[in-house]
Image (cartoon, rainbow, N blue to C red; front, top):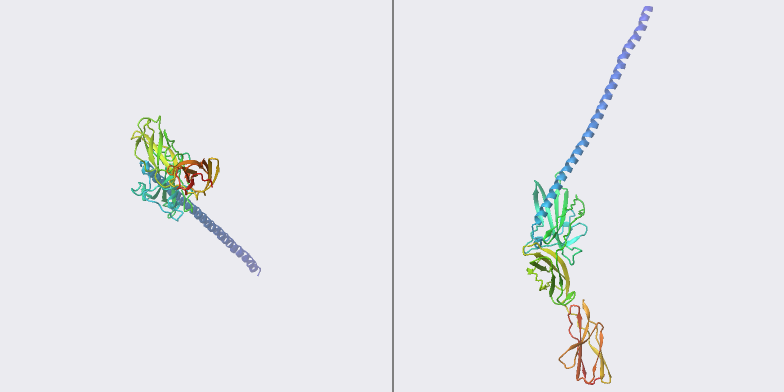
Amino acid sequence: MRGRNKTSNAHPRRAARVRTRPETWGTRAQDEAGMSLIELVVALTLLAIVMTALVGTIGVSFKSVQLARARQVAEAAANKRLEELRDVDYPQLALATLPTHNPSANNPDHFVTGSTYDYSGEGSSEQMIVETDPAGPVVHIESPVTVGGTVVNVYQYVTWVDQPEILGSQNLKRITVVVEYHSVAIPGTAHLLRESVLFTPGTVTMSPPSTSSSTTTTTLPPSTTTTTVPPGGCGSFAITGGGGGAVTAVPTVTLSLNLSGCGESIYMNFSNDGTTWGSDLLYDPLNPATAWTITGSDGLRVISGRARNTLAGIPWILNQQEIILDTTPPTTPGTLNRTLSCSGSTRTVTLSWSASSDLYFVGYRVYRSTNGSTWQVVSSTSYTYATDSHLASLTSVRFYVKAYDSAGNESNATNTISLAKHQCS
């Protein structure tokens, strides 16, 4: 009984130890396997994140390279057009058609308003130059233009420039080229590049062009154009004829020329608009004057001049001259009235009338006749009254008044006042 009890007590403890060791080992192996799987999932997740970022970086870099290449193509297209336009004669530089406004802020024609173009995008509007008969050599839109396998759209504008240091307007011409290009990597996104230079008669100054670009924005960022205006050449001219002074009543004026020291065989041309030039005139220092006819309606008129050595020489521009063309006379003064008084043999008459009007009004001239046929000015005044004294024994004395302006125009005469011999009231 004891032997069996010993045996019975020993076997359970041994069996327990045998069962416990495999269970403990099995639990530890399962825990170690779970940790390895989690680490693997985490590692794969981190690798995916890194690869995604790397792909995005590569994509952005690729797009940037494509955009830079497209911009280089746009710059090449703009520079090519400006170089080609350098060979066009200055008087012929004009658009073949008038551009029209486009409501889209991403279109270069968005900055067209009527016949003006805002070359900077900041309100710097200038008058466009368009010739249709014959058509100007500058085509407004060239599309498509292929440069090195890349296609772009080229917009061109020709405008007048009013240079502050040169009298008058329409001193120089500005050529603005706007190139519309697209990035291959970003379809549908438009980019614009603008280059602008000044052209002068006989001389073209091409400073490093200033460019600007935009991407689907509501307004085109302005470009800062740096250009150099070449100084004018030798010589000058002045307006010395017509109505006298700065206003003329007749369109034909006299130009006084001064090209002393400018060389031999100097030829000159003049223009009323800076585009259409008159015939060649050989400068004669012994007779330094010529007649010139102003065209257009009344108002401020600008005469441009240019000169060159020999007919084949390169012309240089002269300072412009201004004159006001006024062919309209003042209105007729109102009814002429008089009062009389006599003292001894002298009669004094006081005349009065209502005012005249004119843009360049100066005053009134009082005319008198003592024989009914010959009239002479006896006084000039800026007032609406005048006094005249004469012999009361004159058989007949008559008066009328006319207004006049700075161009020399005279109005029609007022009514005539007649006085009899010895009339004193």
